[in-house]
Picture 1 (cartoon, rainbow, N blue to C red):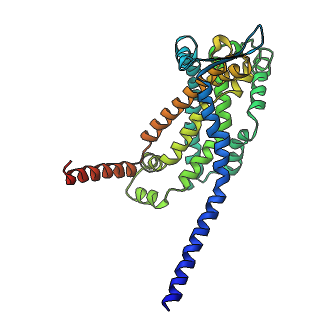
Picture 2: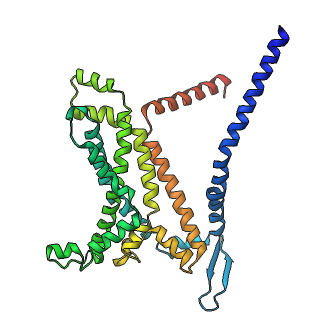
Picture 3: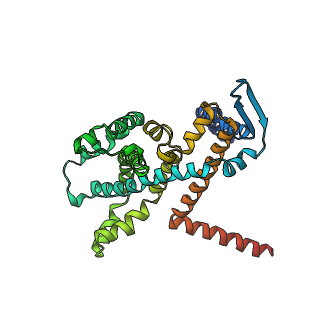
Length: 325
């Protein structure tokens, strides 16, 4: 009997090992793809940023010179990195702030049973439809619509240089980003709201809480995980903005107000510029994204996570006191 029990235990242990092995095999393709297409390019970008690498305009020879952190210093002292980064942030915020506000409004409307709205299905499709189109096609469409001889000026009988105006360019780019991503953000926020326990709203209504109080005291705190995801992904997409401003105004327009960091990186790589400088810009953008993401994670931390962190700190302090440290 004891021998039989021992054999069963060994067999169970063997199955666990076997299942673990197959689990590792199934997730291995992801780590291989990540290492080849994400991690290795990241390391090589940092390595390339240490060199001044360009094609000589006269001899057309490929020149490589070791610069160390000289490229990083040049970006802040000789280049226009801060200006391009400011352009990128302005274009992102102009599109994202109205996007998140409108998405919250639509998400709360579509998920509120008490309103009994009709045609919400069709409205959701209309909101999400621009997200299905290529950004390049929408950018070309808007560049034609707002051209000097375009339909907008012809409709109103005006001669407004939308694409030669500083804020005209910015608002057009921001408007395209708003149009493209509002539907996607609305769907995400709707999923978050629908995941909130309805009993919380029922209890709040019984206690006399108004719809506004329920939104700010229940919906918004419970939406923090989804809001964090939306903020981080939108921030990363905003910092990588390239195709829309590049297609509307090739060189950033008037005073390069729509010239983004990634447009400058692309010019450095494909335009015969300093590849090392472009690599340094990419590394700095990566660090900035990590810092902003960390701030967002910290600011959107839930009350439960804050309490857990405080408890861990208190336990560590108690353990140190117990050890007499």
